Length: 430
Ligand SMILES: Cc1ncc(COP(=O)(O)O)c(C=O)c1O
Image (cartoon, rainbow, N blue to C red; front, top):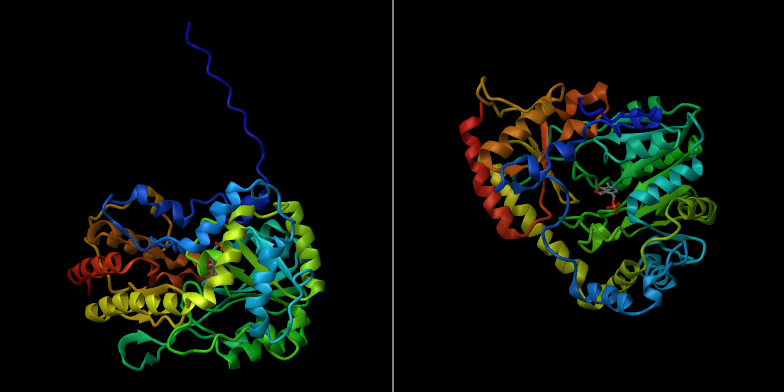
């Protein structure tokens, strides 16, 4: 008798997973190292191939050796960390931050943002996000009943002085932004320095956004996770410090970016009690609290960063890393977005051509041209990147299709090897 097949029962999946693009094969899975040649240099996903500072790690080890360091923390964060955040940020915000009511520690910036949307979105509330956007925004907004409204940044045509092929980073069309605001708009999400464009928004641009936020009574989520990576003496303007903006701004930070520790999953939100109270209540129900040993590590990180000159050294290192990739793209003669901040460079890959009979995996079917270009570059040149159309809504995919994102949060040796390999692209340019 043939063996009876086990029945495979399925259950209806909540529509928020579909609408939030959570079921689609995401770009990280398509360009996962296991799908690429084993010696491919990974400049795709934005995590470092170097360790966080040992003196911060030491604090986590100490916490693990203690009893209390292995147990729950207060839901809004360990007092040591909230105090360290207060000391670090109060001068930058130009006010004495209250660690009890104005700072919430979260499980990465991502969870903090999710909690803020849980706290403030009603079904159908609109949230404006600029494209290209950090891809987690979309599911997080949709899961919380919100409706993302997309406003694309427009690639600049101006060159950056001293860089033949580097373009000044992308711009907001303010008329487009105004048209996107409706009576249902609840929030606007800013990201400066910007992933993946590398743009640092100017004071003037942010003041114009602030005027709109005031006029339409919007909450502003200012995602500043790349705050420590602002190059060439540019000013990092904290949106919350603009006149009248403190009371309507949630500022987002991440230890992952500040201390090269993306796996620690520690982030924080800063804002007025009216915004932090409900967000803290939401985060308590989502994760209850953030893991204790890594909060200790981040606290130590902040406590010692100044005397060790940590952020200054880190910035210099990133300037060197940026130079390696910029030089590679200049030598190739390909246009790229000049990174004013963050650790990403967008390369214009519209001139890359592959043989007509080149075969691509089925996972790329129906995806933008950039998916094919990035796949081809990873397989034939040996450097992986991330296609940028993933960071656009369907209607605007054609803008993103011309770009691939390369991350320079890697050690110099890796970047130099990648830069040499990238020169091989010359054979595939039109
Ligand atoms: C713009 C932006 N916001 C938020 C995050 C999430 O940060 P975390 O790893 O702390 O959750 C990232 C991570 O890549 C990011 O690029």
